Amino acid sequence: MAKANLPEITHSISIDVEPPVAYLALTEPDAGTDLSAIRLRATKDGDHYVVNGTKTWISNGIEGNCLAVLARTDPKADPPRKGLSMFIMEKGPGFTASRKLEKIGYKGIDSAELVFDNFRVPAANLVGGEGKGFYCAVGGLELGRINVAARGAGIAKAALDYSVQYAQTRKTFGKPIAQHQAIQLKLGEMATRVEAARLLIEQAARAYDAGQRCDMEAGMAKYFASEAGLENALEAMRIHGAYGYSKEYPIERLVRDAPLMCIGEGTNEMQRIIIARQLIERNPV
Ligand SMILES: Cc1cc2nc3c(=O)[nH]c(=O)nc-3n(C[C@H](O)[C@H](O)[C@H](O)COP(=O)(O)OP(=O)(O)OC[C@H]3O[C@@H](n4cnc5c(N)ncnc54)[C@H](O)[C@@H]3O)c2cc1C
Image (tube, rainbow, N blue to C red; front, side, top):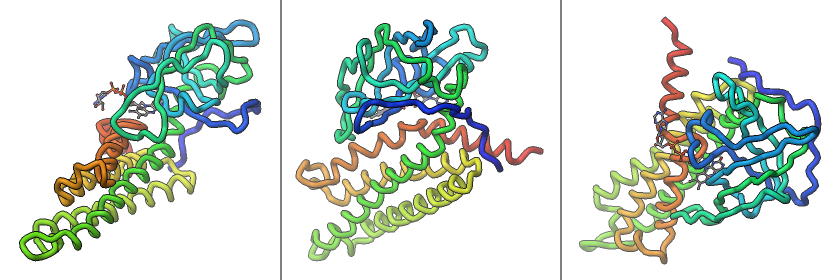
């Protein structure tokens, strides 16, 4: 199955910042899963577009300096997604990171609200032509989902590794807890989740590398591996008892980081819907 046609980038866009720290701004206060609700407005003015509105939950919004932004160029487009366009922007007058968002995990990277107030971006920074932005954004999601799946699998594996070690050293009732069947059942399930997640990720990555359409495979990998990360993190917390709940041990961080993998790059509710739609499309009666 061939990959869906993506808008072609027909010119090079020059970026002056050094080194570029790139990020992607799709989400708005009233538009997350439903990108067709995006309101950030880009209005043509000579050889520039004037941008007004707000983006939120943008990773690297404070530290980053070069971003791809999905904006509305045609408010009357029907369907609304056809009125969206993608721009490459650099920070400058009229474009500020207005607020750092506090969150329970993933603290190594900032999340910010961005405000655009008559920000001028050169028309040459439009990617793929007016009205092609939705397809640019969605076209990048297969790779993004494989990436998030791998991060979920990493959390699942770390939770397993810590648990296998801890279960052999922590003793109750005269023996290591690894010798209690209840703990063995947990370890067996955790290890199986890790391997299954890896195989799904490998399958999706192979299809992606071969240039095949892989939204179903990427969706399955993202859904399964991120849930595996969350389930294994919680099981590791149980295996570690009170120490799993302690800030002095690494498990609490896994529990705080894992849920993001179920939300980012398309929530897991949406992944299951995408999988089902593809199943039906690939198996017509
Ligand atoms: C730490 C962090 C970093 C992020 N980084 C970025 C970033 O760099 N760039 C960026 O653009 N965004 C980023 N996001 C935003 C993220 O992509 C969105 O949170 C995500 O797309 C979900 O949107 P939402 O939060 O508005 O939820 P909503 O879209 O409001 O969804 C709420 C709930 O309804 C469900 N739902 C919605 N529609 C349907 C439907 N049709 N059928 C069934 N269920 C449905 C969802 O699955 C979810 O459970 C980040 C978020 C976080 C928390």
